[in-house]
Image (cartoon, rainbow, N blue to C red; front, side, top):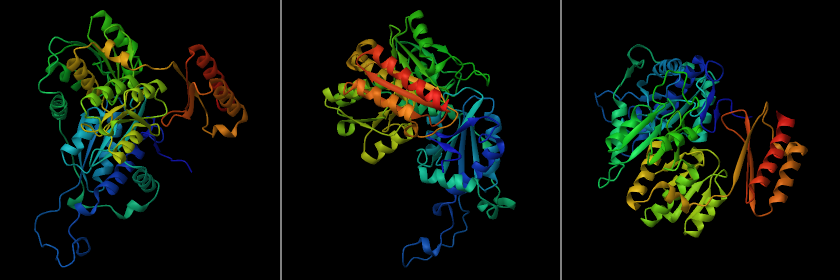
Length: 473
């Protein structure tokens, strides 16, 4: 059976419809509180938890009450989901810290900083305002492994939590902290080298009317840059609306108009960015990863001289890195799987073409602001404009088709789709790549084709997309 709730990036769906209802959010809050807060370290000492020969301490000090941080982006439905989650968490005897709009990596940071037992981000990332989602972090700021998500899901659909209802003074409470974005601001600024600043630079910045609308402009301004701000007037309905990382051409035009040194486009929850160089050319996640990898390799700070990407990353990136003595490992699609691979193997740079870039020495998840700061650092260190830096990363032509589907079935079950894919692979031989998968967050099939001839890969991608549309659309 497929997962009822969790996709590749938490729970996501149309707000106020299953699974993103208030009732479901409350159940998820209860399950998270139980799974992540009721751990042995949060309970009184027991005989079985102590080394042999030691007796439990008879302390009159109260056991620390577990706490969960809850942040959100700027969607209208965030209020509904936030309150429902808080109610569920409190009903299980844990406290809730409501921090309001903050980027997803900011919620992960605050969860660690406040020594919380878990963190929850309410966001559907780059999706339209009418969608919403729930992303969960453990106490260390990392997204949950599959087995913990499975246990939360099991508890949501079972009655096991009915016997764990605290009463009287054991019921949890919720309180709000309003200055959290300033804490995150200080942290972000600390990541930029003390011997550098952004004085004299002009930055065009699009915050997608999302979670980074407060903190992102302040970061670059307080480091000395002049910031041309776009997408900083959220109203609950305009998040990602023809702005942000999905529409980088907007900030590219602004970059040219204001003669800015760089354009930065963040997505709705601030965990990814797409850049524009000073000439208005788009710089995607692969290029960001590549130029940062080369800079880190030169500084000997790239661990194991390896970066982690996904099958969506351009073959040209892999070729370029190899020519410069840097290895590339491909993880499963999804930034959580990129991070898992990095942690297991001791790597410190990874990401996705979509703009999720993870610098594991600084952050536990993709952070669009951190990625932008790293590129700005490279520009300052080398004295080169972004247009020059990105020339080192030679990408192959690549096209992607997104096909709406009504059901997600294995492609190999349908001969028409399999034939289209096999014919395309034969046409490309060893001079290109084809990658076809379902989106983990939307009802889409994604077709990616890469090769030396742009017209050829356009034709091949359309044939594959057409076959999927005919059979599954």
